[in-house]
Length: 208
Image (tube, rainbow, N blue to C red; front, top):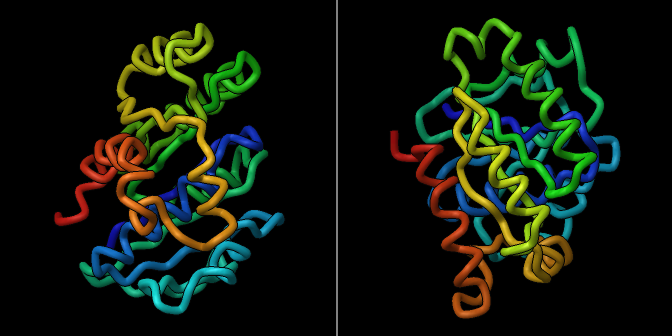
């Protein structure tokens, strides 16, 4: 079983966007996918509620301690709320074998990300390389100074893979409204988004 946690202590970093689109991709590929919505705003759960019945099934739960299937074909994705620190953060990450940290291109978000990533580094499972940590730039506009600053910063974070950057566009708004993932929407309209997702899908190594 793969257990993937999308987490950042800073609110508004796009954790739900990454979580639901990743869940949709995994389900579409035939994996038994569970989306665990731990955020009080319950945005992931709301996305599941509007998801068309004709699309690949994704199981939803808000129970962090719910027993989950451990077989090879199972994937669990945790959408984690902001402001998780200390002992609670340790408890959370023990559930994961992969962590995705989305970061927005803004000075406040980059400063918060630096502190959060330092917290992750100080934790045993991460230090012992039992948990893979990947960084994702989110809601980016190419060739802007602030994106270039974020891009440079993430590249310099040693020991944590800077995986990809997702552009800021209306496809993700449509995804949130319709319960669909980027890979379930029109190919021509989402061609660039699909390319941006490929490095993340490869990093997760779904077939291993």
